[in-house]
Image (cartoon, rainbow, N blue to C red; front, side):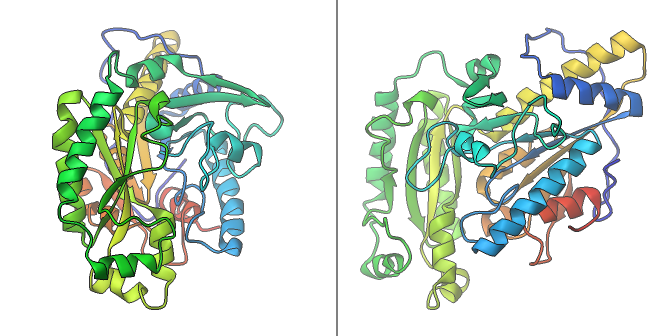
Length: 390
């Protein structure tokens, strides 16, 4: 089950003890059934995966690639389910309220772009076990028509009890003003104008809707910024991280897919992007959560079920294998979680993530980095985990 041909598997970790405090978890029947199967076979497998650019293809890909990616994703999910893997996509996209450029997760599930979750139906083998969305603010374990069920214990764990949103917004804007004292040059603006329809003249600026409160439901403040190098990108991210730490907030940063893809497709800019330092556009979210928190929450839930199953059956504790897959900078917290044993950096991943492969290895993880340019998203995952192409 889930033998990896392209990756050297590290020794499987074992579960040493039950949690000291038994938490109250929402019951996920599909996860429970897979844990029971894993206890029978001696191995429980969890797959955490980013959505856009990883599980499915979207921005930056042509229509035939996207359509093929849909077919590849369906085969991958079906194959993993057949082998009892617990599948949990984690995304920073909006869950039930999309934007002008990005449909919501619910909308894409209803249109068949993303797999349904937790549905008892004849084709339930084609389903994932939970979604975590809005950068981690909402998780879902059942969608049937318009019925969406949230994991209240998870939502409570990622929402700060008291947060002065307006004070945090003002604090973040003050830092943006400082950074913007070194504003974009005329040359940078002219280059950006070639690929970014929604360009701004400021280096750092709020995403539309943030100031009016569209992100308040997830306690998130969202910026865009331009940076001409990874070092500059890292400096801006670190500045915000240090600036908001007293609020108990995290900073999550990644390339903005639509703009970056447009830049790399532009005949005059593709070479500049890699060689000269074309200003690229990045998303920067200030939030009380990141993907690593979602990994810990759902891993704790699975560990709880494993202990429950072991105590009920008297069987030996199974090995636990945890995979994390991604394509951009905001997936590093997903992959670097202590419980993750295997990281998959899929084909087409951004340089901001690719450069972190060695850091993941230093943390004791087996790392698969896709080098075949023809294998994108779900086919990379299939090659890494199943050792086969579709």
